[in-house]
Amino acid sequence: MTAQDQRAEITAIMNQLNDAWARLDADAYGALFTEDATYITFVGTYYSGRTDIVESHRTLFAKFLKNTKLAGEIIDIRFYGPDTAVVTGRGDTYKGSKPTKASKMSKLQTTTFVREADGQWRIAAFHNTQRKPLMEAISFKTAPGLIPAAQK
Image 1 (cartoon, rainbow, N blue to C red):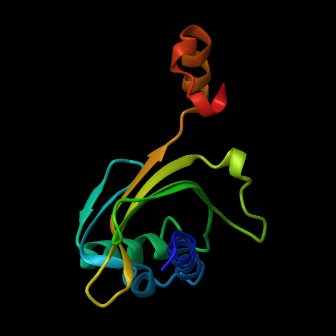
Image 2: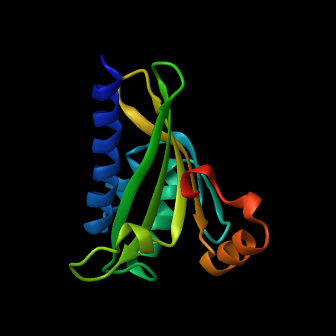
């Protein structure tokens, strides 16, 4: 299998996450995670295991994230051997039919994928971080050495 094929598989799973979220289907969303996956929200809440991830999303979909969809953009996919990949991306939730533009997405995410014994890629770890654009701009202005190489 080529690296391009592996990237396509990972991208397809990211799309399945978005589709499950759009349907507010916590079970389908959780099925994309390993049994022992970890999930850290942008507010710092730590969930451990698929069951915890499913149940928390069942509640989120019924309350705070009701009628929302996910917007996402993959920034980078790196493979560490044939069965491990780390995806860096931007994301946000939105309502309605118009997704958030990539430049306006308020969260950065790191997602670690593993290929399990059944041959399927699943998410083993997810970490979501809220961006602070004003703080970032101030720090870049006062300490230009903090500007990432990709933004110079």
